[in-house]
Image (tube, rainbow, N blue to C red; front, side, top):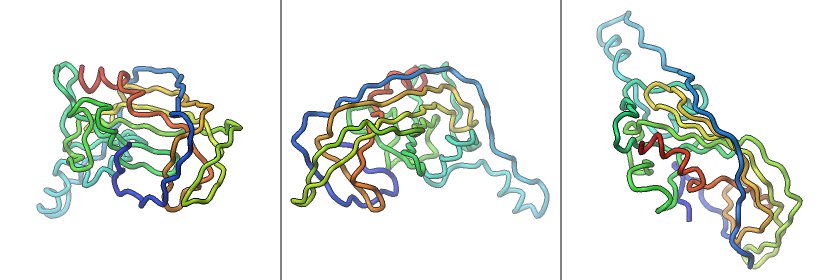
Length: 222
């Protein structure tokens, strides 16, 4: 079961169906990239105290602040420098965007070796890398699944999705790797979770963290 995301919405219901485990077929393409980005330096003018504050290394206060690393390639100067030649684990923060907003995501236990992905209780400022997973498109499969919630039946329409995966340096905003792919399935889920504001009549086949483990390994654990 997936861990609860940062600033989590309150689950509205758990609904069940007597179907087999969902199988998701994945496809896509990848590339090593070298685009760079960085934040603006502070202004040296004004009072000494103001100058000192402006010149202080910048770090994210919460994981939500890492959105700009994923969307604009703007890093944080106060975060640890990334050196891939160092044969050690380079901790990453996993950020997920299902189509409306970015938030931290902690993979289910066992999906990644311990220390690869920072959890909700860890400090975002300790990350050397940011792994960004974004849903870019959804398309209806035409399949409908009979579900039940609190004893009341309803029907769910399923959707396949396209996604973009990026590995970015947290300090510089430099994009190290990019992969685009699809998550597809023609099976009904065993259960779904819905939250306030979500449409419980739709189910999206999403890429799972363990599906891109090998793609991020060369950067997190070279």
